[in-house]
Image 1 (cartoon, chains in turn green, red):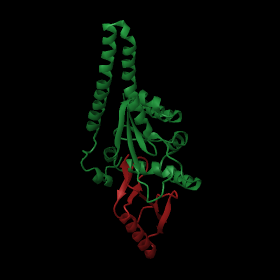
Image 2 (spheres, rainbow over the protein chains, first blue to last red):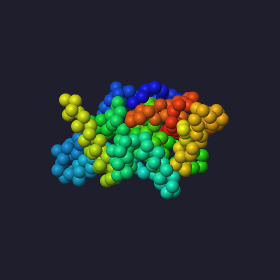
Image 3 (spheres, rainbow over the protein chains, first blue to last red):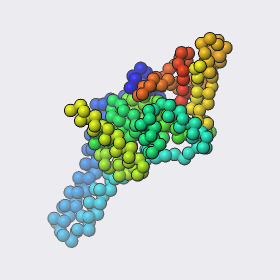
Image 4 (cartoon, each protein chain N blue to C red):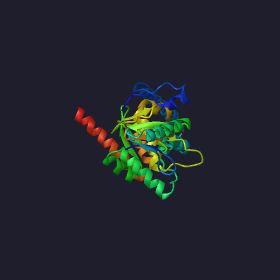
Length: 219
Length: 74
């Protein structure tokens, strides 16, 4: 990706340090620690209660349910970044998809038609760009980024334009893009996959498959 | 023929078309470009797979210049 110029939108988030692969790894680790901090106490309570008294089994099960549910709720929030927004009229949608089609290759066009997501390889991982955000797939981990084009006054952009906005910004400055976007979730791929709409799981699988293929070739 | 387009609610709108041999069309394109920048738009040129560039001046030799709205974290 070209690093010719930083995203102009960075001026609106001047207090955020620019995202780098190292910063991203630190944030990923922080998410893992936070998840563990939510899960471990409930699991400990569950085990402790049963050891103290088998009669407390229902309380123990409730604690285990909490340990499962809290990360699931985070993952659910993350997966919403790929949601489709309400479509515009038929003609604007068609025109915008034509422009988006000119920006990507055949495989990406085909994947977008099936899933609503456009794959874009980058330095931080492989992105899946949607209308209101993007997933960043790196190994077995997925980060969910909430970011969208600001609508022109009193009007709504068609879906293809929404994706094209994010794609052009991502291609011009990937790290700037990750700085402007809000990180909604970072965690295991399987956890996000379960929360995606069925048609979008294929996009995640395709990206994960091609990433593992590249890794095999590198090895 | 080069084109300056804006992504908007219609899909996209062609703001100007020009060739280097037509000074009047070039002038109109430059005026349209400046007006879009004043509205807060950002000019992009696609550089093929995986590459795009933010431009601050209208690149007269490019085939397609795309104006987009700013993005923001949701």
